[in-house]
Length: 152
Length: 334
Image (cartoon, rainbow over all chains, first blue to last red):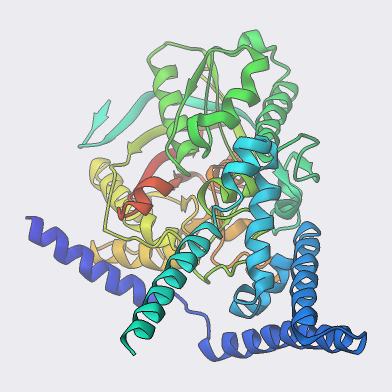
């Protein structure tokens, strides 16, 4: 009986997989390439502008990052960033602007639940895992680097 | 009279006296747009947050219903209502001001069918002369509860559906009217182990198929008995699966099947993918398009089946599947 249900579910899921329409991978990749490329190009233009204004390379990069995050937050507030991602997919999710969007969006959404329990508790609902595991994996990498240095 | 294993036939019919529908702007721009009673263009309904905005829909629909019937609130014995939010907050804050005795119900997107079924049973038992059945959903409050904040950019898969912003309500009574509820078939929780919460049509289709076959068996009939079989929010993917599942049992419903979710939006123009969903979807389509066709006698007898995906973010994150449920209501022109 239980085996029958398992078999039925397995068959059904395989059938569902078959009838569910899928997005075209190639089309999505091209759109992501254009969107992500455009964001990077914008960043590069900013770096060049800052360098022309007399900043060192590191300083120019830092200011570029700040400008990109700011731009993303403003576009999120104006509800334009989600439209860009609807079209561009991973192209606008992966760059730092996507990360900024994932922090700004819950902040706006949960504002209604208060500064502490709303924004405070829920601002990292989407970005939280990235921050946690990002820091954790950099810690592991650092440890490996230290061990490797001691070994050699 | 009890029929078969899960149906009930009303020896004295229960009548649908009047209906009302309130929708948001996107729904008003869809193919059925002009049929809805009230359009609230502001997504926030002038309130401070999405939950209150959904409550405003329920408040507005009761208001419209009372206006259309010219009943005072004291003349309504009960109100059976539900929504998709945790602890039914859209309902609690939406209808509290009316001070009508209330049963809060949850059947995910099948809530309106559950409300009509229970309401008809209450009337037929003589426990009330007149009551309101109602359900609502709101795109933004549903996204917030089940998915991501609205301002977060993400891509929706092609099989996903768009939660309808709207609320539909019906006054049902024991006084004779041209539209009657003559029977119900109550759905079981059907779980085929689908874990994709972005493909709710596939989660719910087995429940709808099970209900349709049970209805045919319980009433000893087949698809020819109905002018239309109308599901709630299966969408295009769910519809294809439903028709195939029912065909496996020996019935062909492809010619008479309709889905509220497919009717309410234009997927090409409105970017809604597989169709509309949410408690509000079947409730507003029933309260406008469907009831008009039955009242005019264009459809003599229909089987109306709001469908629900019993999704919770908790059980989903804990690796559970998304079970489905469906509630069948036989509505006739009499």
